[in-house]
Amino acid sequence: MSTGSVVLVVAIVLAVLCVVPGLTRMVGLFGPVAGEQPRRPAPTPDTLGLLTATVVVAFAAKLTDHVAWLPAYAYLGVVGVLLAAVDARVHRLPDVITLPSYPVLAGLFGIAAVLDGGPGRWVRAVLVAVAVLALFTAFWALPGAGLGFGDVKLSGLLGGALGWLGVPVALTGLLAGIALAGVWALVLMVTRRAGRRTSIAYGPFLLTGAFVGVLGWNAG
Image: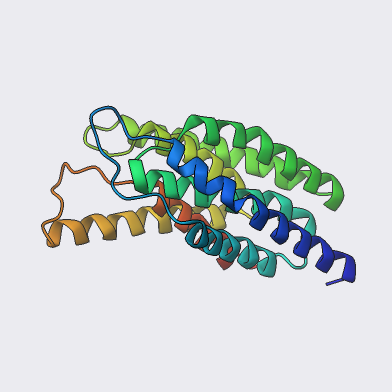
């Protein structure tokens, strides 16, 4: 890794840490669905900062040979932690965060494709995003599926970010997220803290699965 790459990585991490206080305030801005109460308080700046820094540093360490990709994954890490915190607190994945992230990530990956001379990755990411979005929409339409439409919109975003690394990575990340959500739902039912019709926040699990997928990516 060149000196210039190290400087870029450090600059990105520092920039991320600078926006954390604002992210903490943003988590508290989103209330629950009418008639419900927040499931938990908003995370403290220290907690949110630690989680965000951990994710971004982990991505930076994984992508040391592909620094052009790091701005996109750093953005995904910041937005992902924010969305996970909001969803865990109020069971919402706000469109005002998720939807603008589509063009932002498309642009950042587009820049990476130009710098790396690999437009094929960008095209594949778009195709995987569309396929995942269609698949999750079908799941959402099934009776009793338990998915919210916010989860559907998030799935396409994650599908694109994982699809940039490859179809197997997308499958691994999404299946990991679904499996984690299933295990958590089972734990809640076994401990009698939830029933079959109790809704859970899928967003944090889908995002964790995506994190696992990125870290499990093998360049070879």
